[in-house]
Length: 367
Image (tube, one colour):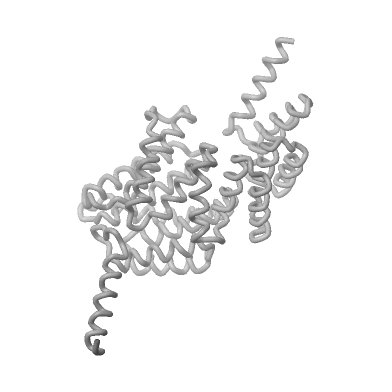
């Protein structure tokens, strides 16, 4: 084969792989934009946070009318906070979400906005809604979830082949079902968790750009369900691609302990503490692992170490609850009562402590 034919063949092959890099390029996007979006996502998953910030700042300047850059920065700050389930970058997230909100509202109001920008509108509003839920601002969260749904429906209408929107619909259906069953001030929403999971799975299998995000989202669904059998393979799949990802390592450790694999769980969580000593959550998950293994002394030690690192009020409430359970296992009802009271005082939004207080009162009144 001469050099001219070889060069032509090389061009054809490169063009083929370039064209087939994505299952579908949504209306309003280009392959370059999708590659830029995925490049930023990869930086976040790999914990290259400073590079990710610069990357999305450039995208915000390059596409000022698109939510892409500001959404990427919101996702970046959210990922960093989720490593420790805290609000350490609350100020940065709040500033960026305000800039994002201004762009998203313009996208929603425009009759000419594309399927891609409506998808980003839905993703932005959905992420903002989760942020408000974490801050117990449920009515704000409800408003954002409604805007997310509206934008996603519009994206699907403009481009029915854009399967990635199923991630947004799946998150909406699953988590709204969860939250409305737990939070009485929210309006009734029928249980659509199974439908939500199926939609997220469809985004994993058939999506163009959200596959890894959808995998992470489904891992959190099974984390919420305490389902180690289904959750562990998802966390492991992501760790095979992004071995430095602290969030998935935390979930993997918890999934392993749910499956009764104590030594493996502790090893994973200890590795997180070595690679990211600023992250405190592994100590809590180690406490859970030892509690599930009925090693209550080791569980208490790890929970106390977790508390010594000043977790958020909600996580203090979770930990006081677990310490109260250990005290009950050890036959110390007075200490258990004190722990449950401390948990209720730390954060009343977690009602497990109050339930234990009321249960102990009822038991005492019967004696």
